[in-house]
Picture 1 (cartoon, one colour):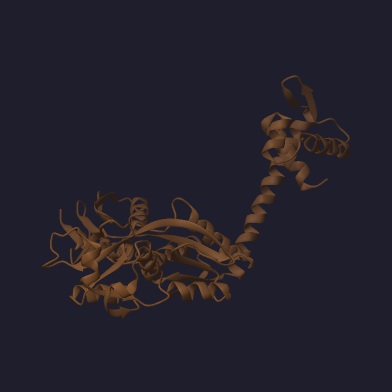
Picture 2 (cartoon, each protein chain N blue to C red; picture 1 turned 180 degrees about the vertical axis):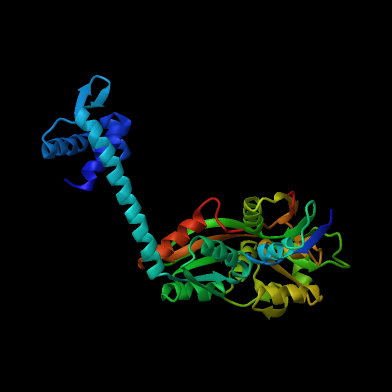
Length: 300
Length: 75
């Protein structure tokens, strides 16, 4: 007799129906019948009576039902206790994130996750898209949160959110009260761009390509490698730039910066959760992935 | 019925929660803390924690992606 026999019997006792049990446990109905027969053989007593509306338990079946439930639930409890221990033993996870989300949403996710898994040790590495993709390929990070275009490579990727990119300008003349900007005007304005390898820069390049332009058509005055330094430069009047709305909530609310739409072009990027297909995730890794994908995730 | 304002814009979890916890010590019955945050997760964790502790909370989205959380001591 094994635990599976008991699990099957407990389900039959609960549903009173062999085919429903089979469905619920992903078994065939003959397999369910066989397991019950095996139990009847082990205890040398009849456990079920077949009726035209399903099955009913015999007296022996009733006794077994209580024990089967207790044993199964005790075993499940044991398994989850062991799982908790395993998680606390091998509890280290390195998460990589691209600059925009790494500086905004991921630290919160890690903090909320830590409340649920206090033994977990999580490290966060923030870099640009290209660096994070390389790190993921070479196994320096376990899980990555990446923004930008679709991922290519040996990765499992799932989309977490869609993020909108907007043109940012300082909130003073001549920008005050503006809500959009034309492509022609964008080409003339001093422009601040992220470094090569940045996901945001890639989105801008591809959007320009789609209308037959490239970065050389823009009046690029400076290249900066961080979201915060671009915000500061735009605020100081160095030029305008393009950035994820996610990273701008505070500045748009306090109205230090303005978000403008680019006429005739929609700028969107997706936020992905990705991990290497060829690497086996630890329990902690799986827990973190499930946490990020859950509807009430700590991903803001 | 004093009201305390906390600006937690741009601050990540758990900073907004910690700022509220610090201020709670000064709160008399009827007083409220009003905190602004741009992190939706902060609003959820503050609301859960404050309800557990017996404070009355209200959350309002006052701008695109900006929330105002009100925590009031009622007993």
